[in-house]
Picture 1: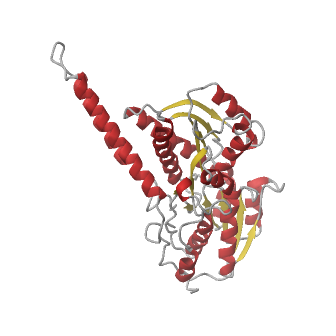
Picture 2: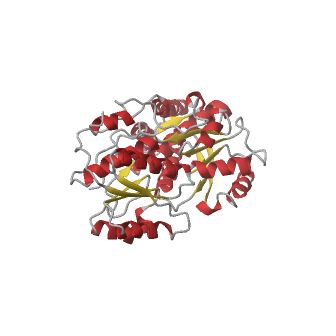
Picture 3: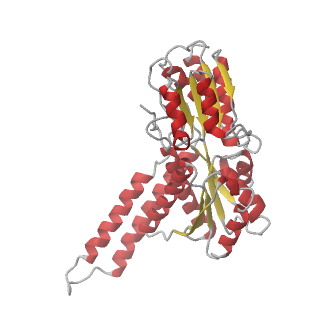
Length: 402
């Protein structure tokens, strides 16, 4: 059984928004169903109803944004308890997408730290260092007869046969921030769904800031790297909000959608984004699936092209890497990002591995995305956000080490 749902999720406003939209559509259908020649409701009444519904939609967005910006606590983002005592002698190999990518490296480093705290034999095998990629790294781990494998940001579908071979050999396999196939990963932290929620929440923040700063609805340009299931979900969540906003009468729209590869980030992507924006003079919002890509777009594309004025446009993505959080904190064109406590996540993976190698189910590790905006970004210009409280002592206590 794969852990794939979070106890506390970001999508605090989605359900209410859908209800609000449903009310609007019901009102519209009731009006359109009047027989020919029957008296019609005054136009002012219809406009008033639509205005009230849009106000409710906006209130839902504001409530969700306020909740996601608030400091997290051990109660709102709980560390699980009740697991078995740490098993001795576990051999763990961690395979990140690349240790050069901040979002991949942070959880890899912390999982190594946590495993070694338990006395485990832990190694990081970085597949980006010319050793045959993730597939070869998993094969090396299987050949060395490890007890567990942890990957970071490597979708199961990309290495399906290799993970199956590891599972068939009795090896526990978990992943950080990845897509799953056939439940090959026995636990994913955080679960894939939070990426959809992150995209939707950033849509809500974009909607509120566009109204406040530009006096306009969101008019978005979207770029997606569909190599990654997590990014696909973030884009889907953002587009769902845009659709909900349009249905509620908010005027939001996606003006342009395009795709890119990770390999394009430092080469063609910045100029492609610039050229797309120039083709849409009514654009005011840029959504890119992850911070590493957006940072390159901003620094190598928007700033040189004089398109980074935060009074005219806004940009959003997920991860809250240090470089991006700094732009947010300084009031730059990136208005917000959503971060996950990846240092804590590494400890969560070790907790799950300890449960799984002893025949117990994985636990919900309680990770909740944090909406980072200028007002709460202080202190993130040198170090990535890794939670509003220190979860590591709670893991140590749960493991009987304190």
